[in-house]
Length: 270
Image (cartoon, rainbow, N blue to C red; front, side, top):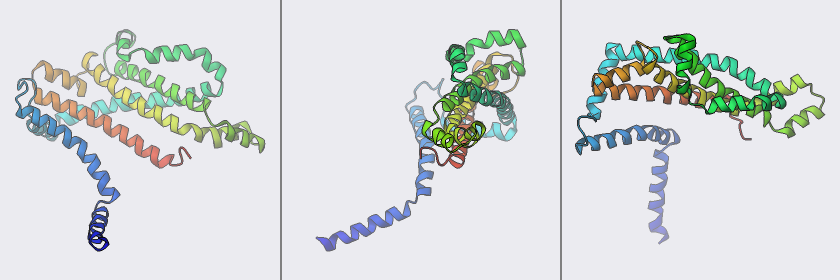
């Protein structure tokens, strides 16, 4: 029995050696898109409303042609620029504001209702107000996206500052560290994980708001404008392809922050 078991053990070890962590991660990354395309292809084979659901391969082919021609790339770039402007503005304002509010809990409690109220209000409901204030165009779209992302970043940064580990703060204080030194060497690093949560949520929310704003606030270029224009003109492969590209942008931005978080705060949770 023992002798016959050895070959099975060796085969299992060889299989484990073939599937390295890098290969396993690659398989995990590719598996999701493949499952999505497979479900879409099966739905197409079953003829589930051909007029509303084009073939995935026809959609991908049309999307590739639009990227090569430059029309889809231009819309992608314009949306990315708007998201970047909104996110950078929200980050520059939100991180210092969150630190100040978190450091002074009394101040935070006094404005907590305002932050939570507007954070809970759908950003799309603010479109008419921002259109009245800033008119139609890029500035209005970026302003409403900045507003939405700002509240998320402020909340997460303030929460991280208020819930920094008190044991480490007390230990630093007992060793004679000044308030500035405690903030720079203890509180700042303690709040980084929660800050990155806010940044990831903020950039995702900024993308959502920009896409919707491009549909309804007078944009002439951008993925949102392209999606609604393709829907009106019944160019379904272009519409689905633009949706896929918008999703790829959101996934890429989130992945970028996850990688940065892993590299910069690898000590999180220790």
